[in-house]
Length: 462
Ligand code: FAD
Image 1: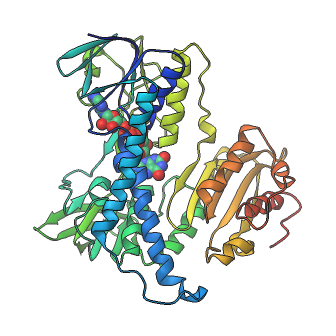
Image 2: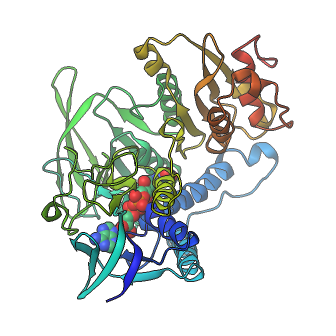
Image 3: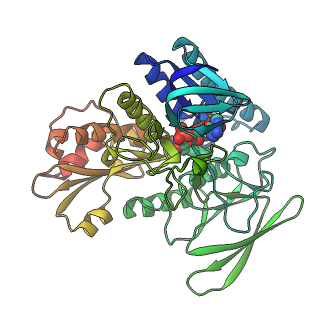
C-alpha cells in the first residue's frame, strides 16, 4: 500500500492536468487510468483524432476546390483511408506519449487499472488499496445513445466508431446537429460521403447564437451536407451492411425513412462514474448523473473532489483542464477559480465557429440593453485571399458601458480569434478598448477589431 497526498482518478485533460499541477505544488501524486494510454477521451477518441481527420480532409477540400484557381494544376490527391487512419493514430500516440513523459518528469505514479473508492481516503486499483489525503474524481464521460438504439460501432456508431470506420461510407446519417455530429459529418462529406443530419430541434448547434446557427447551416449545406430538422428519430434497423432509420416530423407527425451504410449517433455524452462506488459512499449526484460539487469542487464527502465532464457545466476539454488546475490549487492551499462566464466553445468545421459569453437570445431573455457590432469576413482582405470570406464576427456589448458581454465568430481560425475577446472580457474591457488596439495587417483578427468598431462609430471596411 502506498500513501499519497493526492490520487486523481482518470487521466483525461481534467485529471492529467490536475496530477501535474498537484505535483508542481509539491504534493505526492498518483493518477489512476484504466485505458492503455493517458489523455482520456480528448487525446484518444475525441478532440485530437477528430482534428487530425478534419485537417487531412480540409487539405483534400482545398485541393479539389481551390488549387486550380490559384494556378496549382494537376490531379487532385486520391484518398488512402488506411494511411489517413495511420496518420490520425500517430498524432494520437504522439500526444498520449507526451502525457506519459510529463508524468515521469513530474514524478507522478501512473496506477494502471480501474479505480474505485472503498472509503474516503482510500483508492483501490486491482487488488491494491492506496491511501490518499485527497481524491480527485476526473472520470469523464461516455457517448449517450437514444432509447432503443444500440450502438454496435460498425453500422450504428458513436463518435469513437466514426473516427475509425473500416471504410469510407457512401451514405451516412448523423443523428444530432451538435458539435461532434457536425465535425464528423464534415470529415465524411469532404471524403465524398452523402451526409444527412437529422436533428430533433428546428436548428443546428443548440445553445449557440441564432445568427451563427443559420449562417453555419447555410455554409455546411453548400458543402454538401443535408439537414432534416425538427424530426425525432424513432428507430434504427440494421442488416450486416446497411441501416434503415425511421424519423417522425415534429411538425405533422408524418414518418419517413432513410437508408445509409453508417448511422452516427451524436446526441451528446453522459457522465461516466461506473464502478467508483460513489453511491455506496453516499456521494450526492445531480438528476443528470453528474457528481454534485460546491464552488471548491468538493463533493459532500470530505477529501473527495470532482472535475471535468463528470460534473456540471459544458463538456469541454479546456473546462476540465481549468477545473483541474483550480482544484489542485485549492488542495495545495492556494486560491483556485474558474470563470464560467468566459469559457470559449469552438466547432472545428471549415470555417470554424467560436463563441464566448452571452448570445443575443440570452441578453434579450435577460432584458439587458445591448448593442451588437458585426463585421463580415467579406471585408477582410486576408480571408478573401484564402477563399474563406464566408462568416462574420459579432461582438455584443452593454449599451450603456460598452463592456463586452459576448462574441460569436464564424470564419477562418475563429477558434484562435476568440481568445482576444476572452482576454478582453477577463479584463472587463470595452469594445472601444479592442477597437483602439493596433491589429496587424493583413490578419483575420482585423475583423475582430472592425466588429469592435461597429459597436461604436462604425467599421472602416464595410
Ligand atoms: P475524459 O477525457 O473523458 O477522461 C476520463 C478518463 O478517466 C478516461 O481516460 C477514462 O478511461 C478514465 N476513467 C474513468 N473511470 C475510471 C476509473 N474508475 N478508473 C480509472 N480510470 C477511469 N472538447 C473540446 O474542448 N474541444 C474539442 O475539440 C472536443 N472534441 C471532441 C470530439 C469528440 C469526438 C469527443 C467525443 C469529445 C470532444 N471534446 C472536445 C470533449 C472532450 O473530449 C471532453 O470534454 C474532455 O475529454 C473531458 O475531460 P475529462 O478529463 O473530464 O474526462
